[in-house]
Picture (cartoon, rainbow, N blue to C red):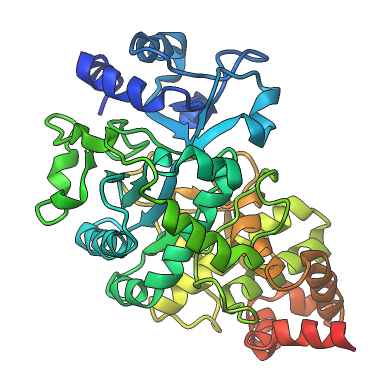
Length: 454
């Protein structure tokens, strides 16, 4: 869609009203395009100014006019509903939060939207078994589905007993644990791409944002239409066509207290997995590749990311770039494995073209030893449309280890382990995989735990 088409879409009265009503009392973020097609994320009205809140539908038009030079395309808002318009400083305070939406992020792969629908059915049916139905609605996110439970389905009494964010986190985690095996079966039928696999995530945190209903996707010409569980049988991706969106306005429906019993069950069941400071930290706590409760299981993905990060750090001394590199390599090797490519021979995503439908970011090919990796103009490593940031590494690697053992001990052990190998081994893609990673990939966590016990 050209900018004129985007503007024409958003300035429809009914679209502005839906966006503003949903976003009311939520902190809003807007994504636009800067120079060189660089994505810009806007969360404040001006530099040093107040956070963006939409209190009336005219405010949507105000955003479009105020930031027209960035060509705003996508609206996001926090899962949190606030009791009052806040200053920047207030947004860091959990006590300012009145309620929090309960959201599962089902992330799919283009061409496999039906599998996302099947996963959503599985999740919705599980919620119904827990007595939660009226307050549930779904949003097509562009490549997947966000399954929502209205935050006001948790009674005020319950929200006073437990913090709304804590309730949301626990419920999302609890349900993921219940459906995990069945979800994995659905996801196994989806062929991954270089940068995407089908997954379900718990992204609850204090500043987390999700796509606002009826917003346009940041790169795909699709609208974030809402629908109810009863619509799942008939849903089609054509509903998201912005020229004729099929949007259910019943996302407003909820039943106060409907999710209280589930909240109690989830909080009591999973409280041992939640850090006491969880609701005040600024990073996400989530489960993305295993259900909760497997206390001493970590998986190969975070081990690969950890060791690759330690490798980069020892060779360059740059910790933040090391985390970006580590996650990038873990994603790439997981993709290569699923595609059946031999990871012991020299492989590089440099040979893989980014998806044609995406706006192509400015990237350059850099090398660590004999290994080529794409890096964007900001210096972060990237696969396809996705760049890997330190906060992503925290969510997908650090937090998994921290459920079992403090990450600082994990990091120190990883550095000591890699220091045993010659520099030439760390500079060789093949030798690093064969001699450093492969021998310990299934026992690295046990090695750390045994060293701590000793």
